[in-house]
Length: 244
Image 1: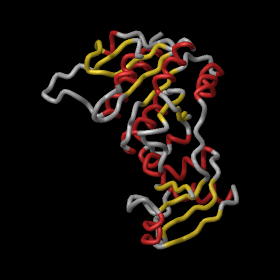
Image 2: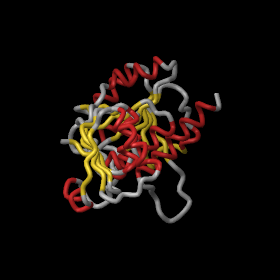
Image 3: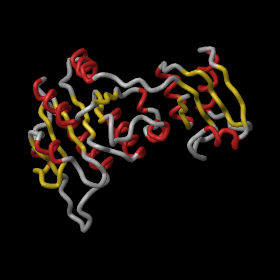
Image 4: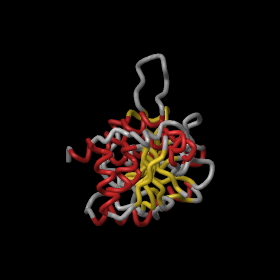
């Protein structure tokens, strides 16, 4: 059983057409515009709505941040990297993918997904092992953006980078030793690589990047949270492409 928690994630799951088996709402929940739309979409798609007290909902969820709204859905369906690239070509846009190397924190992954959707990235690549997958916590942290950003799961990030190079991608790694990001041309087919929260990119992943970019730091703290750094770099890609 796959659970989605929270008003916005549940609403976006319904809007996106994801298969939803059941909606669970807290008894006495305030019926604002979001709740009304959830109930309308459930009725329109013949999805049952069940009312429970908040403690029962907390027992089903991963914690107490469900906002009184749950959805039981089909398991998340990962996409292939080939389909992500095909999506970009169908739009006649240079492909832009985010490659994540051993990101383990669900909040960071969810935030990266949310930013990727906002800046128009075509997809995200994550490893199968030693990394966070699409969990209920990730879905909630993404505020439902996970429903609109294709995510591919691969066995080996290094081999995937080499395959992307063969497809004409320029591999850009985020690293403190890199050149200032705004000096790098990001307008072509780009794979932006973000490393793990504590250690950054693995050695082989780093060695297989075509170039490294950094974010200048003027204060005493010498690094940014990976989701914040990723947001800065993703929107630089968007800025350069819109300025063409």
